Image (cartoon, rainbow, N blue to C red; front, top):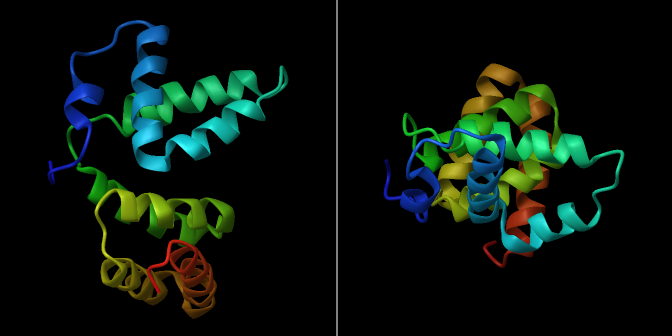
Length: 142
């Protein structure tokens, strides 16, 4: 499981109810994306977006990110690659910071982008390097 912080609390037991899945999802979401990010998302939730926020908390964070089959480092590699391939730039930038929180080094993030560039194309990697550089500079890591 790659020595991930916080996974024992997040993965203890198998939640049965939506409320338990949501609770576990919030723990994992905060650990991966940061309390500040989650607080901003919660603060900007409206009646219109509340169901979507609940859905991603339960399914993405409470179900998928909480599974024991991959560690958070590996999940971050998969997410970064998918975001590059699909051109989801805002999500990619957010997950660069999450990847650092999940233990990927700056050099490993660079390697993920290079690898994705081979299969997703040079223009996609070019954008990814630009966005990752901005995020990593903001974190004081470049």
